[in-house]
Length: 429
Image 1 (cartoon, rainbow, N blue to C red):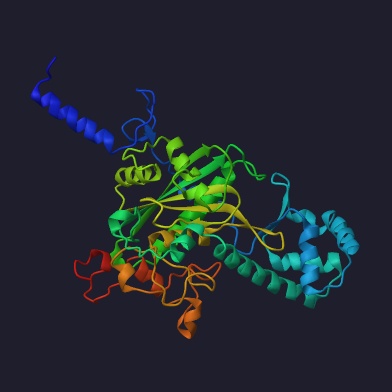
Image 2: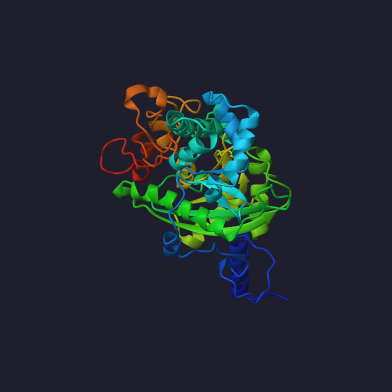
């Protein structure tokens, strides 16, 4: 049977449309909010005013103790308090029945320390250390947290490290990345990821999702609030929840590679490999960009475990993506929360920024994360090794939110020829 010519044209258009959007099986009459057609759910939104009305948020100084004996043994050795192991164990038993009780979270089964100064005074009484020793402890513990974070980051970021060590000259155009610059409407898709083999922390809980959502919202707002007015920055955060097979593999190709769990997560959410490139995250990012009418889309996979946070290099497909662990571990066995700083830091990587602390990147290094023309015009001028000209920033200091001039240039807020037009919008920058 031959179809009328107009029917053939309409059918061809329909098939072409299906080829560029992710399709999964779903009930035809589904009324669920969708991102394309009736098959892929749209990211959820949240009433941010409700999250903002919650109790005060955790600071970078907050930490969790699950084993006070191990924690205090570390500090006894480091600060030379001169206590025996038996003294530490006996003191902890007394403190657990006394001062430590106020830090105990019965639902979470850990001690949550939000005020290190107050905690140091409890240690002074419980361990018998002096007030001077307690004051030294507070300062040393904060410094240890800072160093641990930097070391934690340096030894991670395998995808970026592989790019840095590669002899390949990477030249990226804006069309190769879902978040080429921090200009226009920036959309962050939080993907709360559970694993069929979860870590000892268990699966995501709603209260923890709310906390992570708030931090992501605050972190992305730090970017928007510092943007050059010419960049026209607006931002939104949406949420997906997904479960993937296996367990969290950390920062390696089993996470971000073509067969990694990030790709499985996108597939499990309903996205198809419509362009047959072996990946699903690119289809996900493109579909969200169309759905949200966004200029940039980043996929931020958030895991409910004690793991590293890292950004994925641009050689790993079109989608700009990162992973953030809900907690991270200090060398003293204290567990620290990922906070808004971490979300801002990783998002800026995806827009093109380099780290600015010792052990990662270098002074005057070219950004392998940025796209042209920013990649060819600018170098890392705020790295700590650049000397007196460098300043504290979100890319080099734990807990900072300030975006340096060097980072601003990498992410598209520079004007190389000083003609009043930002580089991403300038036909002759």
